[in-house]
Amino acid sequence: MNLPNLITFARICSVPVIVWLIVNNQLLTAFWVTMAAGISDAVDGIVAKRFDLVTELGAFLDPIADKALLMCLFIALGHQGYLEVWLVILVVFRDLLILGGALLFHTLTHSLTIQPLKISKVNTFAQMVLAVGVLGMEGYAIDAGNGVAFLTVIVAFTTICSGAGYVYLWAKKAAEFEGDDSRDSQEIDE
Image (tube, rainbow, N blue to C red; front, side):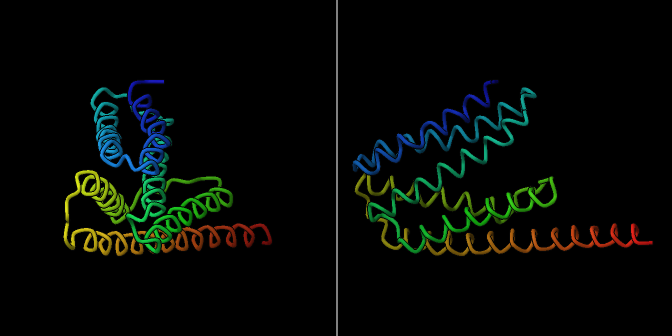
């Protein structure tokens, strides 16, 4: 296991620590551990690309680490009342929809080469800003005014757009796959 993969693995290992900190109302510590986890996401990618250490394992681990971190952050913050429950449900449902769609598509086609959508990258960034922002504001007792409400709307909008984008993409790829399958059966019949 190379350095970028170790950094990613450390990020995965930080998730239960962050959840424990949030549930035990140690939000300031949770803020800084989450910040370190977020920075590690950038660092592992930079190191992997700069030193030609990109691996297939890393390509799978990185999005798993991102999703584990964000889903657990949202669930813990929602459970503690820092985020709206409907937003937590929306974010978790979108991620489960994407995971389920990816598994189904892979099962049917035996391939899965879908690049992240741009709106999905925006959504991930917005989710991280909201979660870290809430941790920081609550940890430092800062009144953000309508900042959290504004970020909540942004996250909800990008979550819906991202989920819809993946559903559209998979439906299109499934139709193409079905079209190829029907052509193959016609060729066999002739």
